[in-house]
Amino acid sequence: MGSLIDLLKEIPLAAILKEKITDIEAKYAAADTENAILKDDLRQCKAEIAKLKKQVDDLTHKDLSETEIEILKYASENQPLDSGSNYLGKKLGVEPQRIEYYLGRLTSLGYFQFKGFAGEGIYLLQQKGREALMSRGLN
Image 1 (cartoon, one colour):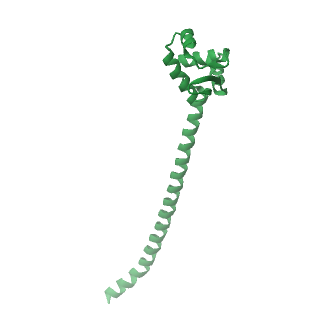
Image 2: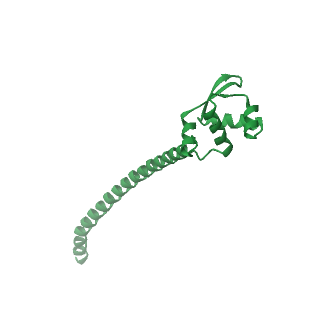
Image 3: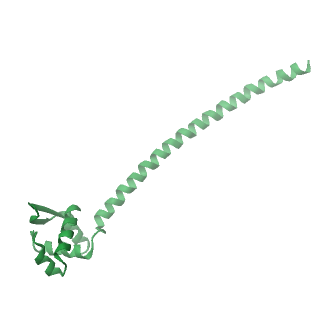
């Protein structure tokens, strides 16, 4: 008979424990959901930070060498810039092949627009090129 009394005493305790387990599981599920939301927010924030860093780099023109700045400066004073790199190379003291490389790089970065065919044509200074000069107080 004593074991029956003990068994009956445990039944209300089992209900209380079951209720506590249900409550803990609900809290765990809520924490898991909040964790997923926070991870998603973190991923979005990291993407936004990367985008803003790229904008800062684009606006500060950190990617330009001194020779490229000199080419932009020369182009701003002598628009449009002819694709013949010999004269510009002599003017800046740089080999024509390097001038061609720099012009191609500046064009691919959006500082110049090339108008021509098969390497013959003109380079037009774009707004980004003007901004790079202005940010350095050169224009």
